[in-house]
Image (tube, rainbow, N blue to C red; front, top):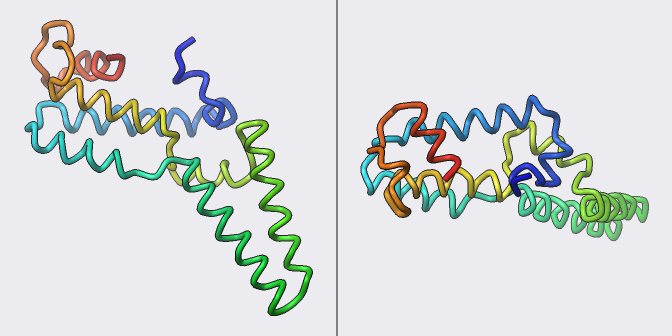
Length: 151
């Protein structure tokens, strides 16, 4: 089984959402097939800056935790439950690879690092960073896209 298929977040994401994300990756690679080296480089740089789902979850959790702590000092100690709930979600994610916010983020199209890297390395293959893909010059041929994704 490939590492891409063993991703804990993907494993806990409904198949239709995974398929939509995979289709978007395929469409992006298809769009960039035959693009100039500079265009591919700009897209690869953008992928290097894209936040993955772990980073989004961490930033979200930190924000809600701090908000809960601040509100508990200003309004009511009951706001500490917000911080407690967020900590519980983080623990659940650490142990299981899933927590309720992940479902929301996945529906919004937030990708895992492996999904981002899958697109990035396919684009690098199209750019010619690796050995030629089965000796075929990149075109808009669907087989080239498939070979680039698998590269």
